[in-house]
Length: 448
Image (cartoon, rainbow, N blue to C red):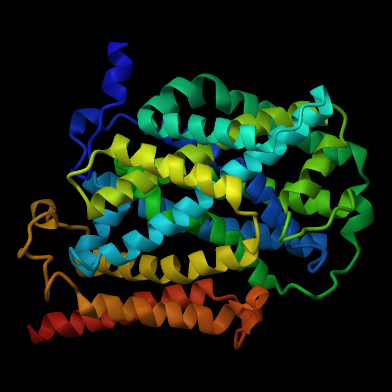
């Protein structure tokens, strides 16, 4: 019990003390591998086909996974170097008050992700209980998974990684994923689909964007976990490689199930056809049960990081208090709101956080040469106070990056076309924000 109490200790938004930076490469790998195993990852893979041919879809998955997870791993090293959460890392870039802007957006998107996860888990569990026991009560499952993920968030990442993931979840999910892959490849003739051309409804680079969107969606919270890492190398490689493997794997499984099982991606009910496709395999319901258990990891991460992000706004409030409040909000939303407009949700996430990542990389790695003065991060009127708590230069660059992203991609499911959606908006917006902040930052430093 003493060990559990020590692992569940609250740290707020202050730098993690060295003796509590205990996550090794294997710990980080297991954490991010488990977070990458998700029904929602397979759901997005379903959107890639038949617009693309199977070879094109698999290549887009590989390219997008390499780019997205490289960026995620790089961001993880910043958290390991400073020991502070991601939203607090925005203070040197945007200013103390400026960091509140991405914090609010992050809280909104994390609550959205947590709600999606609880909905997905409740739908899958209810389908299982109806199939196996004739028991139908979706609302009860919403309450169950809402409470469970909230309790995990209260325990914190060290407890979840060392006491749950490493001892049980990782191994169960690994075996299940291998079995699921073998079942798909042996039950369906993949060669039949290999030479079939795509319908052309999805461009290659837009598909890459949708693949990149998943790891980038974790950027606003990656340092919440990498701050517990023993070293930069263990954080970066453990995060990037750990998430890359299931990320690419499950996107590919989603595409394969769509083609081979003849299911269609439906933005209004994306999980239903996926559940049917998996359940149709031999012992598919067992695989669904294991994947369902692992899905709790994503719910935990979203609730925990929402609580940590809120502490950037209200540091005087405890992490556990916020976790309880967020869990209650998620439970209510999951019980009342359907899962819709999933593709637009991913595009919106990318539009805000991809350009912000570009500016952060320019600021931390180039302009400041990997040196943030941690004492100044918390000091009102200090070095990172800028003008009234805002670094307006960085805010402006961020806004330009978002405009570039949305201008290219648009929001097609909301009827808002982009100027070149086929191009993909991630890399252009990342490059624009990186280069623009680098140039303006150097010009500003030269004048001062």
